[in-house]
Image (tube, rainbow, N blue to C red; front, side, top):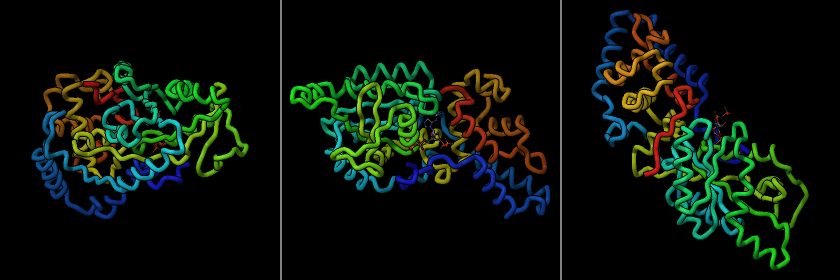
Amino acid sequence: MKNTKGTKKGGIKGKRERYAEQRSRQSRNPKSERKPSAIKAQHAEARRSRRERRPVEYGSKSENSQYIQWFPGHMTRTKRKIQEDLKLVDAVAEIIDARVPMSSRNPDLPSMIGSKPRVILMNKCDLADPRATKQWAEHFKKQGVRAIELDCKTGAGIGNFTSAVSSVLADKIEMWKSKGMVNRSLRVMIVGIPNVGKSTFINRISKTSKAKTEDRPGVTRGNQWFTLTSGGVSVDLLDTPGVLWPRFDDQLVGEKLAFTGAVKDDVTDTEQLALRLLEYFRTRPTKVFCERFSLTPEEIAGSPAHELLDAIAKKRGMLVSGGEPDTERAAVMVLDEFRAAKLGRITLELPE
Ligand code: G4P
C-alpha cells in the first residue's frame, strides 16, 4: 500500500534517522576540535540570532512563517486524477487529522467532487482533545456533512465507516433496490492530504472486516480496488488513495501541518518550528506540559520561547560541551513529544 504512493512516509522522519543526521552533522564538524571559547561564541551567536527571529505571539501571521519552505507539487495533476476516478465511485471519504480539522482539509474538495456524497473521517482522535473533537463533529453535523471519529491505530470508530457510507448513499441504495440491484457494493474513494492516515485506515479496515477476494465485474483486484464486507455491507475502496495537497494561502496552515508532521521536517527549520510550538504553549500552558518539563505556568508565561527551549534542554540534560543547552536536540524532542501527544491531547484549531 505504502509503495503505491509517491509521497509515502515523507511526513515524519524517524527519530533515530534525525538523531543520526544530527550526529553526522556534528561529526563533520567535530566540536571536540573546537576551543571552548569558540563554542561559547557560536552558541551566543545562535541565541542572538534566535532572539532576533523571536516568534511573535502565537496565532498571528508573521514573516517567521516563511521558515517553512514548502511547495505543494503535482496539485493540478492530482486534482485531475481524482476527478477522473470520481466516475468510478459512489462516494468520497475524506480523511482529516482531528488535531487540525481545518488545516488538514483541502478547501477545493467540495467543488472538485461536486454532488458526490461524502463522509469525513476525523482520524487520530487519540491524539486530539476529545472535547474539541466533539465540537468539530457538531460543526460538521450542522453543515449537513456526515463525520465520524476514528483512531486507526487501535481501530476505534472503524466499525462506523460502512454505516456512515450507507447513510450518505441511502437514496442511491433505495434506487438500486427498486431496480432489483440488491447487495451492490458501495464504491468509495479515499482522499486526504499526506500523513493523515489513509494507508493506516485501509490496512486497519482490511483487518477488521471480512475481505473478499473473488473476481467481480468492473472490479480489478490487486492494484486498483480493495473489496471488503463489514456489517453485512460490501464496500469497494479505491486502494490508491487520492493524495490531496493542503492550501497554503495562509502560512499558519503550513505551520500547523508542520507541528503535526504532515509537512516534512526537512523543509522546515526545526528549531524555529519548535520555538513557534513553544510560543503556542506559552499562551496555553497545559498541566501536562508543565509537569512534563517541570516548569510552572508563571515560568512558562514569563519566558520568551527561546529561553523556554534552553530551560527544557537543560532539564532534560541535553547539553553540548561547555555546558550550553543543545537546543537543536531539544527542538526535535519537543516536536516528537507533541506529535505523540505526550504534551497532552491537543487540537490546534476550533470551529469558528
Ligand atoms: P497517509 O497514508 O495518509 O500518508 O498516512 P499513513 O497511513 O502513512 O499514516 C501516517 C502516520 O500516522 C503513521 O505514523 C501512522 O501510524 C500514523 N497514524 C495513522 N492513523 C493514526 C491514528 O489514528 N492515531 C495515531 N496516533 N497515529 C496514526 P508513522 O510514525 O509515520 O509510521 P509508523 O511508526 O506508525 O509506522
